[in-house]
Each structure stands twice: as C-alpha cells, then as structure tokens.
Image 1 (tube, rainbow, N blue to C red):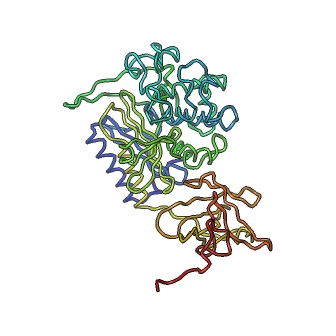
Image 2: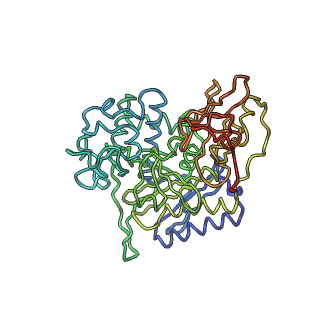
Image 3: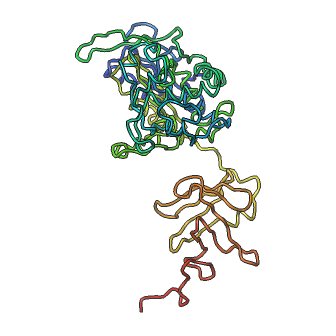
Length: 461
C-alpha cells in the first residue's frame, strides 16, 4: 500500500493533523503517529514528536498490545474455514486438560468463556514470559470466574489459549503460523513478534511532572497471542483494509463480516456506551456510526485501530507511552473528520445484467396483518425485506436455489422465506417462519391464520 498525501483535501489533512497534535500535546506522549486509509489504501499519515528533527513515519514500529488478538482471531477463523474445527466446538475437543474445556471456541473469541481477565502471579506485561512456561501457569488452578457463556468478561488468558489452539492444530508455533498465513499474504512486512529497527522505545510519563521513565520490553512467551506484536501505521492501515473487505488469500469477506458481528452479551454499562464485542473485534456506536476495530496497550505503548465499513474509512493511532492520550477517541475522530469532510462517493447505479421474472414477481408491497412491508431485489442478488415506515424487523435473504430464501440477519436470521403459489401457479402469499404475508391487508383469498371476517372491512356506523 502506498501513501498519498494528495488524496485528501488540504482542509481535511489540516484537521487530521490538528487532532493528533492536540492528542500528543494534551496526552503528553513522547510521540504519536497516525494513518488514515480509504478505498483500501493509506491516504494520510501524520506524526507528532517531542524530539526535534525527523519524526517517526509509517515504517517505525510501535508495540500494538491487544490488537494482536485480532490477528489471533483471524488465525482461528482460518482453522474453521479449513474444516479443522467448528466455532461451537468445546475447547476440550481440540486442546484437552486446560480446566476451561467446556468453553467453546466462539466463546473464547468473544470473551464470554468465563475466564479471568489476567494471568495469576506477577504483572505479566512487565515480567518475562519464562515465568509462565505452560498453559497451566497462565490459567491458574481456577481458570473460570464466571459461568461459561453468560457474560462478556475480557480475558487475556483466553487468547493465550486460542494461540495454543492454533499451534496445536497447525503443528507449528503461533508466530510461524501468523507469519505464513497473515503477514506474508497481506504484505505486512513491518509486523513482527520482536521489535525490528526502526522502532520506538516505550516510556512512562510521570502523572504529575513532565518527566519520563523507560518501560521494560518483555517477551510475553505463552501470552504472546494476546499482545506481543509490533507493527507500524503503514502495516495496520493494510490490515484495516483487509478487515473491511476480506482477502481470499487469508479470509473471505463473509468470514471477516462474521468477525465484525456482535457475539457477546452486553452488560448494562456497555448498552449505555453503545459497545459490544464480535469475534476478535471491538464494536461501538459513536457519532452516529458503527465502528469496529481494537485497542491495545502494554507498558510503554498505546495503540488503536478504528474502522467504519459504511464510510470506507479506517484510522490507526500509535503512541509510545503507558498512559495519556485516549487513542480510541482520537481514532474515532479521525474517521469522523474524513467521513464528514469527504463523504464516500457511491458507485454509479447500474441495472441488473439480467432479471429473473420469478424473483421479480416477489418484489413490491406485502402485508403482515395490517403492517406494510416492502420487498426489493438488490443488485447483489439478495432480497431486502423490511417495514415501509419506522423501525422493525428487517433482513436480507439469500436464495437457496429451490425457490426458497434464508434470512441473513436480525429477527429473521436463519428463517425460511417461501413463496406459496395457488394451483394455477399464481403467487398467493409469502410464508416467513409461519408468518403469512399477503398483497392486501388480511387478504380473504390467502390462508391467513385465524381466518378473515367474511363481512370484510367496515366503518363505525
């Protein structure tokens, strides 16, 4: 991916620079770098630093902490797509003896497996991984704090287990599988488990004075799949483009979309914040748009990747300090600045190359009782079905090839839509999960459950 500063308007570029300048100054970060991607490529890079002279660019490595989890999740999804596991499989089926074997692979991905947030023993992020050589050292004697599947409880040990699962089923260390299955195909040549020059040093900034202290750089050992990686804004911009559209060399668009779909029960505070979790991705609603991505932190470093699929804009922000700038807010603001200043230009409308008259006959207005719905044939060959006014149950439907259709999302996800015809072949009604949809409200010629009063519609007199 090449970076072109000219692809954004000057006013937009200045607004982006202003936002990261404020973040670096107010957050007192030794350095802060950022990138924005649009249309599958980087279109802006900016940096602010406390050091005079040349500032860090898109090729300088920073530690990205828990953004590593998204890479690990991609590896697990590849195992699923290759038929080596099912997301509903209990961990015990593939990695026995952990003490957390009743949790499913999907629950581990979504942080709903009930595992502890941290590893027992000394602070794992500031101590050598050699202190935790085995999974039992990471999980402890009582791995489960909560009932499996009941609540979202973020767990670093959970992703350590997933990394061990990848190594077990692939027959190679997690780091080698990561390199061959993600980094090399996507061209992420500046992403690695160990720092490679040029890279930033990690610092702690005194909370009450403008003074700094170097942070230790530990190899996390077994915990690596939860937070080991180093990367650059250039590489993470490429990775963000992959998370938006997929890449058949790594994961299909459908599998990446599955990762971006909420998979964890939200707590009350999460509902108020508009936040939830998918399969290795954080999901939030902010500024009226749906954002996916992940944050990361380790002593000395902060990281954030934020993506708006609808706006086709992604932002990456990295800093080399333990705390200070709120990079999640910065990333969301960078996306908003570009999305509002230079909104996505839609592709030209084009008619379908061919029209199936049997499918076209389904299009138009339908009624469930007295509720009006519209059914539209979309350019991608799906059916879009939903209420004509207000909010309500809506979904897209995929053809099953036999005249029936299966719902893809919402209330009707997985439900069967079947056009029902009369003996003469004419279209009578739609059966959607036992609901009867008719061309007229309570059509007396359709098999409306409970029947229709023979006297029909009437006034009050």
